[in-house]
Length: 243
Image 1 (cartoon, rainbow, N blue to C red):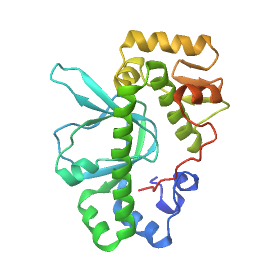
Image 2: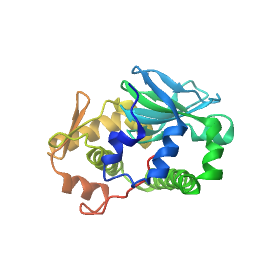
Image 3: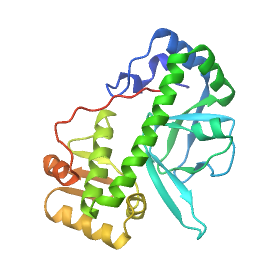
């Protein structure tokens, strides 16, 4: 059975801003159904158009660009609560592809109602604009990291950010979170070679900081990992809208 917006399990998480009853009622109208896809499914293809938009309810995935060589460049990783397909909704076609890394359950929205949101629900429209602005901010941060951080700091920062998000979503058991990606995916996202990534992961493991094995990331020393990542361990988490 479809999950009603009123009972959405993501809304109980502190990482997401609260919604008014009016906003919840609109989101229920905006939502046209739910979709489940298997791991490896291409949900959206670069250059294609789609009449649907999505919010990830369960599972994990990634965004990537296809290169002329036939290889792909991972842009970032998708976790529950992420909104998918805004590019197609605004620019008529996707500028990157979206792939399911695990089995996914998604809320499906009718793209034609996107303009109703801007016309009748400006607060929700602002939330959507905020998400786009934050994506731009993270892209700029990623470019700065690629240009000025050593490989071990890049990997440490990626682990901290993923772990923090997973913790806020209730995906942590002890000090472990699911991380079902390939080393190549992480290397691509951070602009590192696979060999460098493998050596760095070994160093973090041998130093008792973090272990990534069999689809799980185990953080052994969070404060030290934050120090390597050049992040404050006691920083306040940033809340975000849920579309």
